Length: 475
Ligand code: BG6
Image (tube, rainbow, N blue to C red; front, side, top):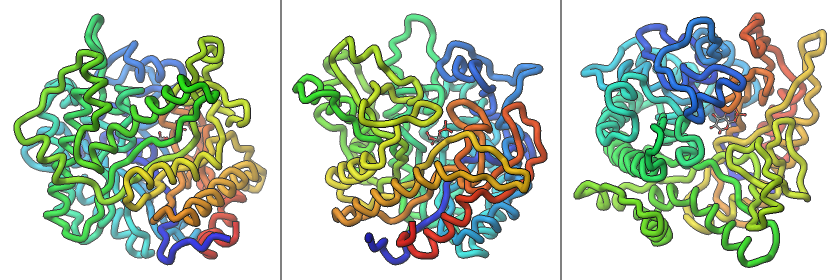
């Protein structure tokens, strides 16, 4: 039985646009994620096939009301406290603080909202863990500057980061700069709000935007450390180790390359320099990354304190065209089906042991504390008449994953916390659905936005409560 460290940060994680709603309230500006509808159309927008910088009349946008956390956070935090949460990961909506992104002054009402939110958490001794950018870019920054293509975003982001570090310096110690920063390569709309014109060199634009985010991240780490000397500022990787489909060295080399696509970001954020394999990749693909004079020094001097990561599944790759035909489309990160593993209802591979392997891989590589800031199972729940849900499948998933996290700790991996994804049902990032539920708490709302928004406890609620109370002993 694993002994989880004393003070281990058990809790849950959400993102502003997936819970808050109130999308234009109290001065908030419109953001990229407010323009994501549901279903097939969402995918078209996310992959840049359809573009609009304004909501389209008659279209349903789930983020506009989401689960109305903006008005109901007190009730939700009381429920998290009842489960014994030690930490809650939230993100700040950039456009609540700077509605246009380039405003001369921040929006006081937006700042006040997060003050109140953090006070409410602190009331129950829940440690706020804050993501500075979780997939959102103020729409004005897209219209006026072209989003992260433009170097100017670095300064706007720096101002935003400095503003929130200063404001919340006594309330927030754990920060993360960009959520799943490597997502930029796979879903550039989501990661950096990039949409491409016909004939553009997409790879060049993506890596230049990535450089901008990496510099912005380093500047935020610098500012954070100056303003809050005891702050812990992390990066955030969409993790999940890549297995070669066979022992054919070609497959093994391809798996290594696939992993490096993601590690690239963290290598820069944690080791402080562009790795050799990235330079080779740029050479081979004729990419030229424009850097300013002291970028390299900034990256070198302002590395992260810990490695935050999400883990939902492992990935598998092959060089065999026949095997490659069997790509699971559920994962944003294309993966061939692994014959040893099952998948969720959304086609996400379920691999608890891969969690242990991933944690070990990250710790071997960076030797910095790890923080598991997302993990969980998106599933369809059946509501009982009394408002409960018998979500044994969710308990099973979490139990197996937490057990493997324990194994990683036994392996010597320094893990400081675990915030499972969506402790309360929220809007799905990839599909916009409500029926893809992760929560211990059920929210009465459906894919079309109907429902009372009433909260009720699922079976997993008491289960997770006992996990936390026993510090991971009783799974
Ligand atoms: C991560 C994101 O990619 O996965 C979250 O950081 C997201 O925002 C989570 O919600 C689960 O994905 P989905 O599509 O099931 O909501």
